[in-house]
Length: 153
Image 1 (cartoon, helix red, strand yellow):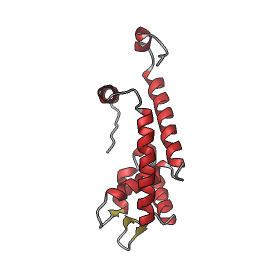
Image 2: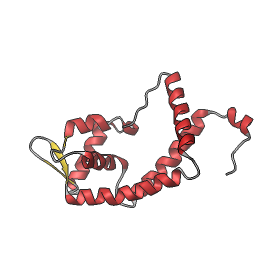
Image 3: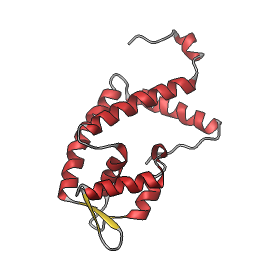
C-alpha cells in the first residue's frame, strides 16, 4: 500500500480528518453490504439482538435504550427500526412488548451476517489483529484524553 505521507508526515496529520475518513469509508462499505439484503444499520442491529435472545425474546424498551446510542440513532430511530422489522414480518411482538425473530427474520439475519463477515474481512485485509488492537487502543486513548465517550457491545 502507498501511504499519503512518510512516517514523519503522517505523525503531523490531523486525527479528526483521518478518523472521519475511516468512519466514512468503512460505514459506507458496511451499509452497501447490508443494502444488498434490503437492510440499513438500525434494523440490522435489531435482528442481531433478537438473534442473540433466548425463546423469551427481548424487551422492546430495553432494546431501544441499548441501541439508541449507536451512531446517534436515538430512541426515535430505534423505534422506527423496530417498526420496520415488525412490518416486514422479520419479528413479532407479544402483548408484553417482547420481540422475537420469525423464521424469515432469522433466515435474513443469517444470510446478511455472512455478507457482513465478508465486508469486515475486506475492511481488515492486510491488517493483523495486533495492528487492529493497537489502532483501537490509540483511538480509545484519544477519546479518553478529550473526555469523550465511546463504547460498543
